[in-house]
Image (tube, rainbow, N blue to C red; front, top):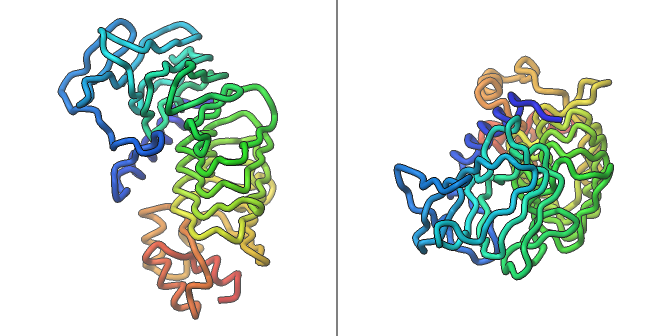
Length: 324
């Protein structure tokens, strides 16, 4: 189900993406403040948990050493309210994390954008205690309280298919990472597909986004979807960020998925430095190894689109297949 090296590489890539971000990444319920954890040289250890104290003198869990399959996070630790989960709140070694069920207390109001659940590779359900004002769970899947953001789909949840409910606008970081399904239906309300949100879903062969309102596909969103053969984009799509389809290929054709944008359907070759027709592009490929985004209507000529590749906005290989 999982591979230690792949997950380590995923975590490293996530850190690289974070370093390029214009602002610190933060995924939490609506109108929450930025990360409130207070920097310190040492974590406080209490029982199975290691934590920081936030500026509000509440607990932000940063590690967990529990060994049972069912983990219930207490609402207080050492007499202080538990309000936050850090990026590795449950640990970071998928081979040693036994959790199949995790229950969050009603006091939780912040969950790291880096998705602390992604290392729990045996997880089947996430529960939220009654009375939580910021998060909720439906059929074992974790959402913000308004259900406009899907935070985590447990990767060992039973079922060959899943339908994201209408109203969800954002798929959070790694929310479907390594999930064990082959069919995924997305709602019209969906606008953003987050970083690594569908990473390493090896059973997914086709995805139709045409009925969604997706405007942005963030870095590495479909990275490692090795069986993905076709994806259909909506007219609303504005940007596809770096590495969004890295390591995507058809095992029979050795190509990336077929890309549809409006009435144009093309197929891009897999990454190879020698496929670039300009020395500067080859150097950029070797340095970045990213698939970059495009929007042809922004450019009046192939030369302009070719130049945009150097600034990270377009791809001349794609442009040549479109006839620019």
